[in-house]
Image 1 (tube, one colour):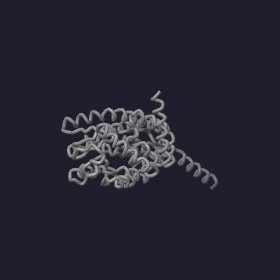
Image 2 (cartoon, rainbow, N blue to C red):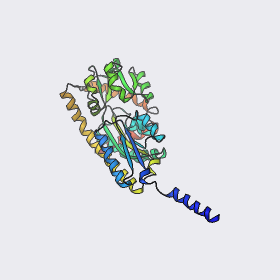
Image 3 (cartoon, helix red, strand yellow):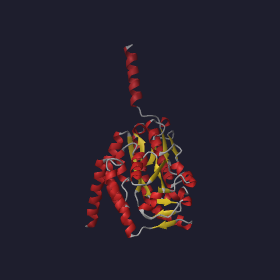
Image 4 (cartoon, one colour):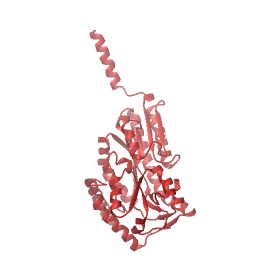
Length: 336
């Protein structure tokens, strides 16, 4: 009996300490990115690198086009194990760790991609640690271009938009409250609802990156674009730590390397495609409106008035302060 119990204990110990077989490991990744888009292709390439390291029996699936729901829903699906990872913008990432909002929810703060890159890299270790503490591993960072305003009617000044109805993320209630207090009309929707909503008149202005406006054909119904870099769309590739811990060490290294490479490629290509997408839409009838100096002054004044409202509500106070500190440091360095 003693020998039997010892054998059973050893067998149990081996079962608990032996890594999952490749056939038992799977990664199901969700994203709003359209099928065959730059972002979808990068996710597929990352999966091939991971499967080669994990083993031929490992399973990797990507669900594009928001087929797993909006970004808040994908964050929920990861928590309950229906997805193991996702490519998300700040809208979804904030459902996991609110400090990430400091990189996206501060209008007209960042003056260039170089400025954003500097601030993100300075804050990256602390933010990734917070994600890990919440049960997620950040594999790579991407972005999708600057937010511009696409509308049915021409608009250039902030007050011009007060007569319009804005698309707003359904999960961002703080943003909606701030917009209403300033005289704007947000309509909370999911991404999949944008095109039918603007076609039916439920909304008539969409804050969007040029690439997304082109890919989704938003510009056909909202043919006026305000050429202003309102805010960057920042994103990241994440997987759950539960899925991460089932992988072999070799597969973890391969996935992190591929994720970092995919993020860099997304950033490089997305920034290039901002101008390319605008040029393509202009050839098909898009009207581009550029604010003059006086109008730009009004936009900057609006942004300045928003910061005190955003601090502590849309962006945690400590990360809000850290971003402004790092922006100041970058500008001091580049001014020399």
